Length: 392
Image 1 (spheres, one colour):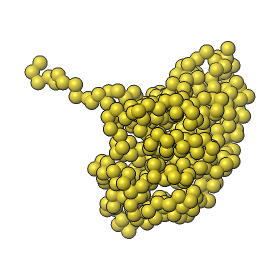
Image 2 (cartoon, rainbow, N blue to C red):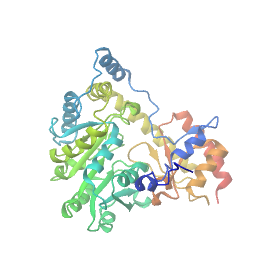
Image 3 (cartoon, one colour):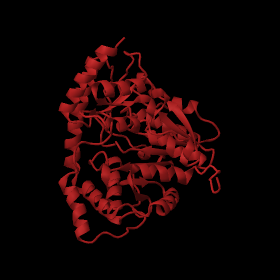
Image 4 (cartoon, helix red, strand yellow):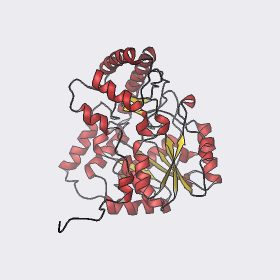
């Protein structure tokens, strides 16, 4: 037929990316009544009212124009002050802090700024589903670093070292980790830092769950001795402040690195939404009580879910961070995909198969305790019926 397109119009990089293993189950769930979702990693809290009002005030005051590509100086100054106060690490708000459209854009822009075709990026397995896609889109090569349930999925320096090659360039850490809730202890971070120094590696540290840590202090790898210059720190407001839809994150890095990241950001994005930045500023300045209240609620739900799962044969450890439990499904003969699909169809509970997060996630499922306590209790009851029907 004349005019028929014969050339492959999709890029090889895009064709290489697998569809999200998360989204499949929520497309199914959307067509079913009475589904209890333990899948979407989103706070069930609404954004605190004073934060929303700050954005409304910005609109009413006609603060609706572009900001600097870096973001508003007031927000960058508040971010830098917060990091100094919390971790003792210093960034120049004028040249070393950039406001991004969530942490997702921050990671994507950073990888595109530092990766050349063929460079290897070491990522935790299991790890956040976007990491692999972002590396592929940047032209890099994903090198999974397997973690083990025996270590509560904490990534180990020895495992990272075993995967190094002459093409290794970046270690991408999620700390705390999505989907496992693993937190990297200071001693292990120090070993990873020493490894990065010895092999001249860059670390991108995704710390979007840094405020959701239970019973211990979060350790920022950029604050470790001699590490600030080889770390790109990314964090944001979505999880801690219940601001997922506002799409505000930030990148902190030495000036020469941030200038490169800014090139990607300014051509792809221009700047984060002005009114969202006003909301983020209010969150930093006056949102600490909200964070503490939400973390206390998550902690109670975490305890409930772990105890409930263990009582029905879904062996679980207590996650030290984020808001996910990653129970083993070894008591069944089902793969993680089969478990998630059958649980959804038979008991109307949505979870995410562990295999969606990497090969080391097979045999587990991700369950979020963002859901209300009564929904968690109902889900445990339904999952108990499912386990009685399918346990070996």
